[in-house]
Amino acid sequence: MKDKILNIILLIIITLFVAIQFIPVKTNNPPAMSDFSGPENIEAILQRSCYDCHSNLTHWPWYSQVAPISWIISHDVQEGREYLNLSNWDSLTPKKQAHKIEEIWAEIEKGDMPLKRYLFLHRVARLSAADKEAVKNWAIPTVEEESFH
Image (cartoon, rainbow, N blue to C red; front, side, top):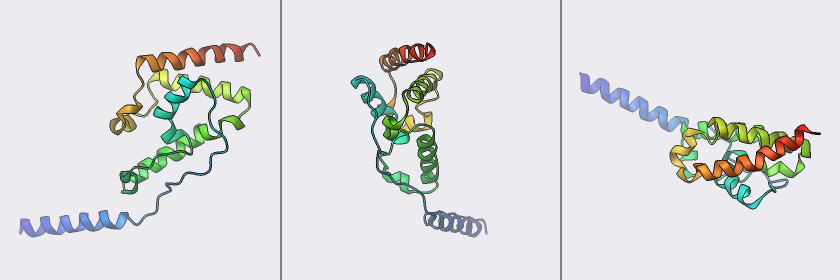
């Protein structure tokens, strides 16, 4: 009797898993209007650690097509692009760029970016102490310069 119930439960779980695969998820890369332009070392850090969620150059791995993981990834990318899209960087005013630079550093300094769940599968995106120091050295003069204007 227990085996029959377990088999029914397993069949329901498998059926639900297959069924949710048909729920569409947005995994596209719109054309980039412009690209981030800044110091070469900062570009490299941002491309390695930020571009998957904060640009139109997202790399969509195979598991980004498997629900329910696909829902989380798609949500993170959409939210990341809304907050900061480095593919539209040059379309921002210098004042807006300075503000975004300040926000980039604040998120890194707090340890909120890159997301820990992203780092779990993307170890290369981890920011070393040297990476953080480079971003800080780039961001702090920008923030200080902006405060004088």
